[in-house]
Image (tube, rainbow, N blue to C red; front, top):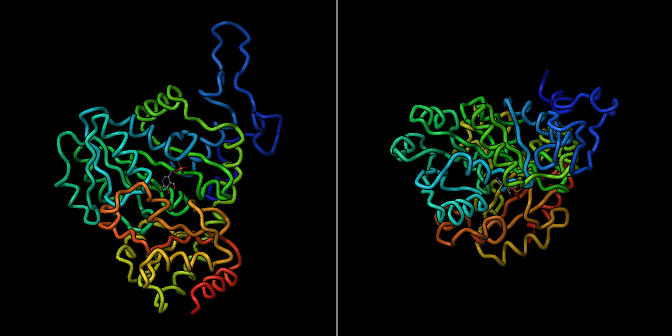
Length: 381
Ligand SMILES: Cc1ncc(COP(=O)(O)O)c(C=O)c1O
């Protein structure tokens, strides 16, 4: 079956649930045994629930994975993968321009526990070859990156890592499996903040992991149950409902973002537009190969690179809400310097190009005429 069909049907069989067309919410922490020692699909809700299993089955199908695992947030999903792959003395090589929360987890939680964390500019895949050491166990990638929409060649990097016995994890939050499937390019594990496009309505916090290797799956599943950072049934239900319209929503996000990027590109008050769909974006050709379309996020840098100028723009926007998140049906704007990347040291932000006059637009699926009109009026003199 094709992607849009699987997004609606995979992971769930109504015959197992009184023919309920939508997966029921099993709002229970525990399931009853008939006799001591009975083998049950579900026993205690930390270990698994039918609603969570339906969600995990659906995401596994969409990522082309053998298995998926749900967590209480994207960060909990990232944390479980890091802990399953790394022990003290091991090294993780991470993309230099990583999401601020992942950067914080690596530098302030994993590193103090004895994991060596190395940040490398992987825009040229050969750099990975030089960076790998005998201690390297994991390569951590994000593509496109948050917030500057940088691209890395997942297939080329995964081929190098595989040859050197290093596992590859990809944060696929920005692309979603509709636009990009890293496991098909050689990655070992994919993580998502389903809080974003997969949920799609800014009403749920949830993380997902997709993995095919049975041993790695078992290790991550062990941590999921042992540490217990699992989502409740309501959050699983909401994410499942979001997944059903993922294909439709992503098409519209991409349509709208392409037009927003075209409007802002060359605007007299805008210095830079970061969008992989623009022909002069350094990752444009790679994005054409690696992704179905270019996604719904457009990041800009104003010519007046001061916080006051960014603030003036966001205050004048009427449709776009100033908010941390992205990927919902509604348009949002984020000041990455103080918000999503607030936890990153200023010198690191400066090195990456995350500046006071930079704004990340999560282009929603409202009517494009209203979105363009709002941006035009907010930028008018
Ligand atoms: C790329 C990326 N990965 C992971 C996360 C963390 O997800 P959550 O906020 O669901 O914990 C985010 C959140 O913004 C993100 O943008």
